[in-house]
Image 1 (cartoon, rainbow, N blue to C red):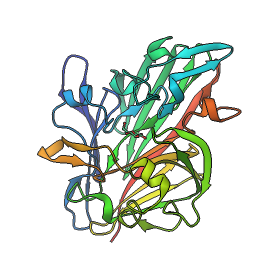
Image 2: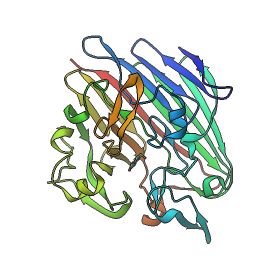
Image 3: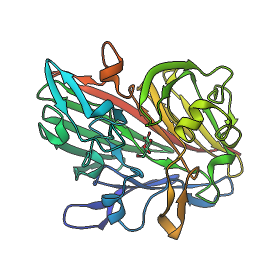
Amino acid sequence: MIEVIKHIDDQIDLISMKNEQLEVVVSNYGCTIIKVIMADKNGHKDDVVLGYDDFTQYQTLDAYLGALVGRVANRIKAGQFSLNGQDYHLAVNNGPNHLHGGIKGFSYQVFDYTIEDEHTLKLHYLSKDGEEGYPGDLDLTVIYTLKDDTLTAHYQATSSADTLINITNHSYFNLSGHKENIYQHTLQIHASQFACVDSDGLTTGELKDVEGTPFDFRQPALIGERVEQDDEQLKIGKGFDHPFLFDTQSNQVILTHEPTGRQLIVSTTLPQAQIYTANYLDGRLGKYGERYYARDAVCIETQNMPDAIHLEEHPTTLLKKGETYDEITSYQFKVIQ
Ligand code: BGC
């Protein structure tokens, strides 16, 4: 069942998508995932994503809790790029670089929406040519589907001119229901390479094999046993804040919290994910009156290569006029005994 449960104002709503296994509360503001409520192995329900009770925090703060991120997620070096012989200048909003679509990226935009059927919510946003400095009118449709224990996000976009696109969702998962930090969460990532970053979090273009490093999650490992290890890239990122390049085409990331039996399986058409251990959460007030600190959650941000426009010969983030960007990421919230 899908129903509007709250009007925040005359444009912004909270919409509940619910079945016997899951309740997902979404807002049409930034396509934000506000809550994901699931049972544990004893039937006890908790909310397994971070968020805010006070809606204005989504509109004013910068950690992108639950938000869709675009037009281009992650960083673009110096907020500049050239396309078809033209130079484009974007906001520099993260040290010397552009981050997550700019000052008013898609996370801060109101989408129009329709409830298509009992499983399907369709959201839409037209980003005008020049918005946040990007070329082309970009027409983006986001379809959230809830079936059984799986939430699927389907992103489709076209542009009136060649442009850049890299859409992700920035949910902060904590399968304990934020009863503890993520040290006792087991992570498995089917990735044999990761991308190195500089001290500003920008991908440098260097890819490293995970073999023999704390980044090797090909076999499940506890995050707490890895994230504080003495490793140069972990120090630079203040934890994990790196793209992992997938070896498989489905079920690429599996996050498990053994004590509650909760497990999240992320499956995507995209080639990588930025794994981010909430390194910059600073004690801000979140839902249920709880404060959020570093390592309180993990983000699994499926995407194409950050800063692809500068790093790749054929940038995967380039969307040409007449082409369709079409990507799917699904989140299966399982209970294992
Ligand atoms: C980035 C982090 C950043 C966070 C919140 C992540 O995707 O990689 O460096 O702090 O988003 O903005």
